[in-house]
Amino acid sequence: MTKFSKSSTALGVAAIAAAVLGATAISAETANLTREAHAQTAAPVACALNIGTASGLLQVEPVIQATEAVSGIYQLRVEGPGTRMNQGGPFSVRAGQTVELGRMMTSGSASSLDAEFTLTIAGRTYRCPTSL
Image 1 (cartoon, rainbow, N blue to C red):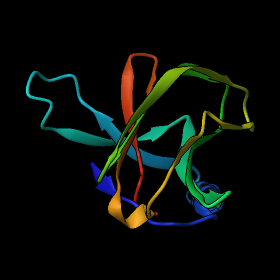
Image 2: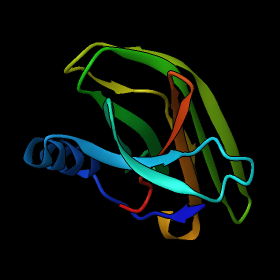
Image 3: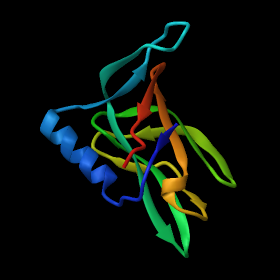
């Protein structure tokens, strides 16, 4: 799990990085049995967590921006003092489209929470950045 903090520009930064670099590198889990080795690979999407507040609650939104049409499954886990939330499901996105995959709301501060956000696309699992 990775610590994350409040930021409303996470996807914008990811999109700029993708434009500058030509591709977004996110961690892809390798298929070995130990799952210890991770390889950097270009992914068909940029992904991030948008963190904000609404009605006095912390709001966590997993967001993806596609460079090509893809579909897959996402999984988001958020844990902290008094908080344990899991969210996930299928997604489909067109090339150039930005999609909010869901929304979680909780009390407390972002700095006290850990998050893990993964995408599985064409059998490969990508870990999205959660340090904002």
